[in-house]
Amino acid sequence: MSGILMALVDGSAYSESVCRHAAWIAGRTGAQVKLYHVLDPRRAQGRRDLSGSIRLGARTKLMEQLSDLDEQHAKLAQAQGRAILEDAKTLIEAEGVSDVITRLRHDDIVATVEAKEAVADMILIGKRGEAAGLESPHLGSNFERIVRASHKPVFVANRAFAPIRRVLIAYDGGVSSMKAVDYVARDPLFSGLEVVVASVGQENAELRKALDNARATLKAGGHEAEARVLKGSPDKALGDLIKGGGIDLLVMGAYGHSRIRTMVIGSTTTEMIRTCKVPVVLMR
Image 1 (spheres, rainbow, N blue to C red):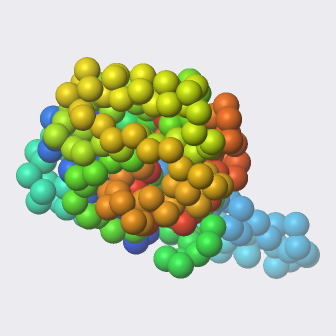
Image 2 (spheres, rainbow, N blue to C red):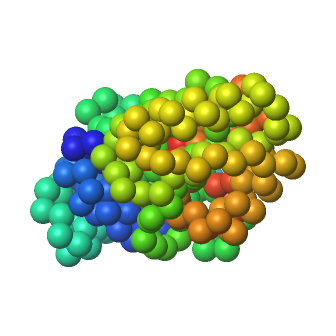
């Protein structure tokens, strides 16, 4: 890869995992890590707008007090953002990565991704954000928006970093899943890792040929990939393989053309990311 990793940190419990995965990727690829913490001005404005409920002579004084409080809050938010970035940088550097820079931005987080991803090779985000509890059944509120907006691979970090040795590619023959195969075959990030390519459906000649083609692409990249045909619903079949097959990382297309269709932002991908305990790389 050698390029730039765009890592989004918000101070949540998942931010440490984002940093450790960024350090792992940078260590394998030589990429620079750009850490972003985004302060959304609209969130701050929406937090307290009482002007319409203030009446008579109290209005001016209270508005002044509210303005002062807003200014204090903005300063505290900036100080907190800088502290989050500094902690994240220190954590990554402690993993042996020296090329780390930080960016504090006042903007919508999706606008930030759209503005800055052109120079990035991968976007790293946490599965859940600062507003969600660790056991929340919901994904982070910005997750879907970022995946929809990004044109680069999106690495979705799970709660805690664990060594990555075995990679599963969810393959349905669609464009994004073929890109996933090609990505794993070519990128130095996956060098030396075990690879399994799996499809969900009824085994037949067409499906076997598609998997053989995927294996051939992976072999050209130096991977002796194992191929699997799974039965059942895609999310359950893939989830069972992840649990029982020693899988440490899932790579899948964000959009598919068959039963693994709806991927992100549809049932399978959203459910996979919500329930599986390993990080996920999403390909557009």
